[in-house]
Image (tube, rainbow, N blue to C red):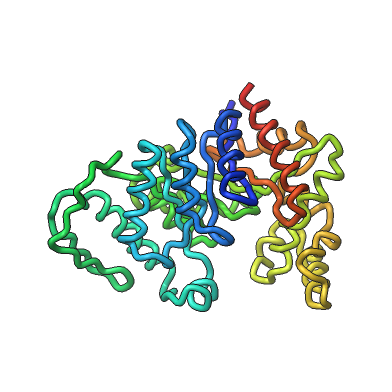
Length: 343
């Protein structure tokens, strides 16, 4: 029998203090990792705060934008957080999309797969050599490095920090298998998608690098909503699914699950003026059931069991397209579920 996936958690908080409290609660409940995203907050600053406020849970970014910082800055932040956590940090990186990079951050997008490959190589090279005083010279189209006369005068918790890569398309997913310590899925990733689309690409990357499957930590991400009233739990999760369903770029993903018409109804509603905060009202139950972890505790547990033999861990996060008090209640129930899972 395949082992049950491990549970990791993406905490939520309106304030940094609440985010820390949620992270501590998840740590106490048995979550293996707490993951911090980058959008409404940076990923690295909250990770540093939580690293100093926890004792044994691993702290990861899921994800930090790979191109919005220089590789040296990313490496320095990773070293600092790894020191604060005494070697518990995981650097999760993702490319983001072109518009986000070019219009929001004014950074080059380039060829994202090649770009992120060079970024990871530069980060790893810096982490390994920052304290040696040796020149750090790397050639590259996107992220060349020319560092001489530099020596970081501080002790490092580790000489190598785990680097996880996020990816949904086959090329980026293959790269994660080739060079990543781990792979982090998109927020919507069903067992079928993992089995038929993601794992073949990951295995192709692993084989190209002559690595084994156990060399890669496969992390599935999922929006999670749990309630004794399963219907209520599903409606809480509808907003996240509606956000992604409104984006036509995901058409292949929804078609794969036989949900093309369901997605089209969401897109039509969005184009006709339905605000993002109301898209949940037009999201079908089949979308929620297929692409989120929502329902009673036993239903969600069974869904997580469906990843056994496919994913190593499942990163669950509460639905955030809700009033804060609703997200807070959803988070409390998830942390209770994590405790029950490890009982």
